[in-house]
Image (tube, rainbow, N blue to C red; front, side, top):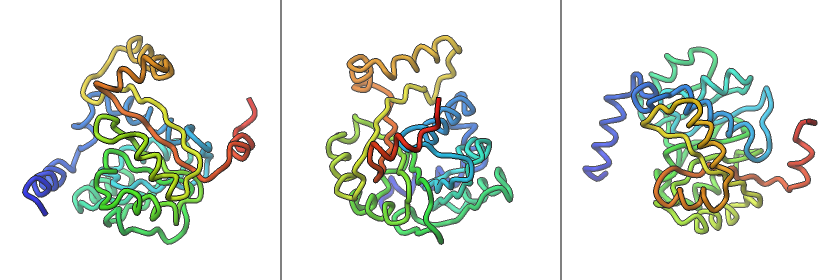
Length: 225
């Protein structure tokens, strides 16, 4: 393991307690928006579905998904994060200590999420194939287009068997808490097409939902308006 990787690992161990509170200027808003997209982007999740959250940290996302009736299962490679997640979520969730490259749940899950952690995959395409082997519904993760070519990631997803991909800009700042009107305006810009793509050249990320469900099946699963 490189010195840089060791330093990052040490940081996770040192900051595990209160990680979500320290990492986000407005953690509730940021994670609530993330949870909203986990549920709604691609095939919609419903109460009773199960989400496996790889690199779950202290379980901040889990608290929001549990409020939606989603069963939550977290996995993290840092023992201190596992402890923090268990303290946060108690008996309402299952939290395990494992590497996302190797972990296999005891039973298939409806959705798998990987936020701020895809770069930990030793081989991205092999990792997507691994996740596909136990994920019945969709894989949801964030993608920084300044770090990875979007077309390369989409090609890896399709090679892994994910034949339908939804990509949505995510314009919620991590380090700045915005007034509600400005936050609402940024959400409108998420759907602005060329303007959103231009903004992504400099800041923010995409959220990607990859599934093996045809468009017709996705439509059938959507609730009636």
